[in-house]
Picture 1: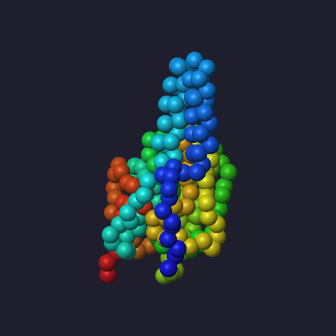
Picture 2: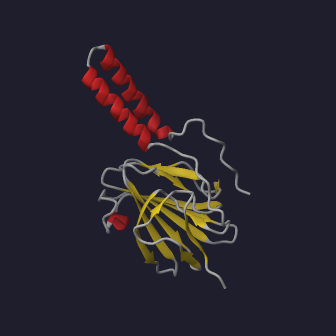
Picture 3: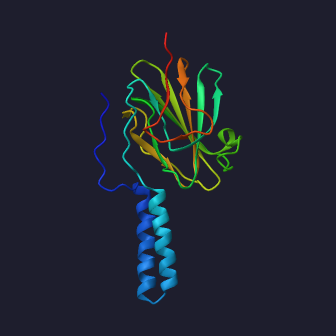
Length: 214
């Protein structure tokens, strides 16, 4: 069985600690020097950063065969792929949780980072031309699920915490995209999609697909 994550003590992704601490220090210094207005500004900005990098616990779908969403956000596209599967595109607004999670239990088979442009993540061409990082996850049954982390207009840094050979459990955190982004999930053939365009999903919790019957 893939290893389970240990509980986190701080529900904020480590990538946000530097920003938050720096802004809190600036706010404190501003207050001590009599700059109340600047202090309020820095404290408010620190709160926004903490909210952006928040990392809540999630409960996987009760159906063990279900594929969970790799990200929080809104489904903006559902398309058939040339391989006979389906792609589900999820747009993450700045107010969404930006932690990416594994849709299934499996082993990272390959990763592929590709430099590119920074179009708005909801732009139809973003999935083709924007900077992105692909993660192929192979299950014990041999099926391949690809998660594509795609940078957006403001999102300029894609973070992936694990490399080839790492065993992921369903819903386990594997990375994030900073400040607005898009995450695409490529399903292999033989899966029915359980969400529709416009639906809101929660990473690691919402069931977005399951094997077709018969």
